[in-house]
Structures are given as structure tokens and as C-alpha cells.
Length: 84
Image (cartoon, rainbow, N blue to C red; front, side, top):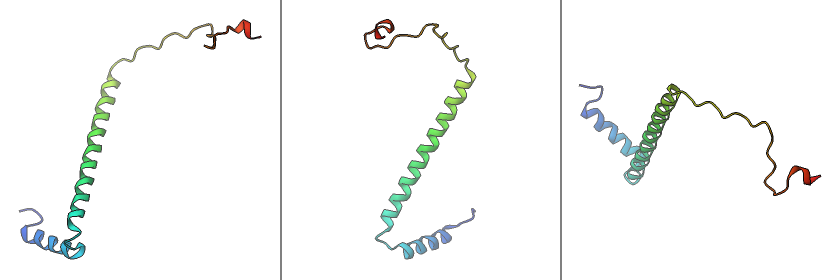
């Protein structure tokens, strides 16, 4: 048998009931459930990020495009010679 048997769990539930009261138990259970759901979602996202990072690390990245030797004129409709 595990560390806690059903009598132990019954005592723990009774203590929780006395501490929080019957009126607050549904809100407490809802809060714990939402926290667990958020935690599971974050853990799943972290595992997906790790899997994506490891798959991109094993692939060869394409080489960057060569830089242009002449700068481009601004897109204002005027050429650099007519601005002076």
C-alpha cells in the first residue's frame, strides 16, 4: 500500500473542510483545477519548443544572401542626385 491509505486521506479531507469551510471548497477546487490546466499547457509548450529547437539545430541553415554593393535610394520618389 502507498504512503497514504483511505483513512489518512479521510482525515486530510476533514482538516481541509474545517480550515476552508464548505462554502469555499468549490472555489478552491476550481482554482486548483485551473492552475493544473495552465501548468500542463505550459509544460506541453515547453516540450514542443524543445522539440522544435532540436529539430532545427540538426538541419543545415541556408547561407545568407550576399550583401549589395550599392545602397538603395529611399522610396520617397526622388533619387540621391536630385536631393542636393
